[in-house]
Image (cartoon, rainbow, N blue to C red; front, side, top):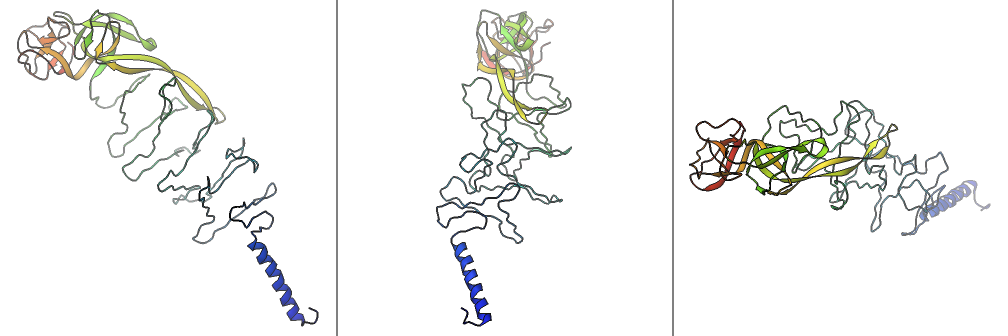
Length: 381
């Protein structure tokens, strides 16, 4: 090499150094780390405490990091534990993955975006009853912690509980909780003037129900069959007394109404009340979740008949489509006043001057002969 001119010697040295660097990179070497050139072997990037193991800056329109898992369990695995720990669970004060968007403008960006195409976009799980699989927090006055949006005709936010039906207590799909007297646990709003909420099933309200608009349907009160007879849906009932019911309430004690008796309503169905624990969680003073529970009395439908000693619902107002009406004492015309007849539980057309309290409502259909079921506007008077 000494025989070469000085300029040629420096060119040869530069070529050798460049060749060594390229060879190292071809072998998968990463400066300050470990790597493997095998298609199945791992590549590792290590860093000392207080420094970043890997920084990627993308100043163009491409992707900073792209990872693919072909047959593997994850394209990117993150853990705050040691390399041998196969858990993605973070430590007590650290995160498995931390993402931040430091932009001063709200222009549609995000710290994390996930797209599943034909699969779920994000899957989160937690095995701790005092933790949440997904938790959102917004420290502003009018901000939203978790937002669900669907530009199509689907559902913005959907919650389903898949617990065993035989488990104690109700299985809660979606729960809402407010931490102040002026707060609202669950709020629904329809900007177009349509329905803000829809429930397909029974709804239990343990406090006051404040309605600022119309109530469509009929009202009913819980009662107790204090007679020796089985009553059916559509039977007229009279009061026999009163007794204590669930949660400190009162139950009417009723039986089939007969001629001359005051009629208070119409049998809707037999029900049962069950007190069950409601599992849940609430935030403590530090903002962490802690398990909580309370008891709830829920009502479930049993059947359209109510035997002696059973609990039932009695309709006391509104339109009922199934009421037992007889024309044995004379035809019932549309709009006729109805009172109890000779057969317990059946209604007939009232005479010219019915006694106060005996009229239960108005016939909304006519009955020419026999006994049938018609719609009645229940309005005891």
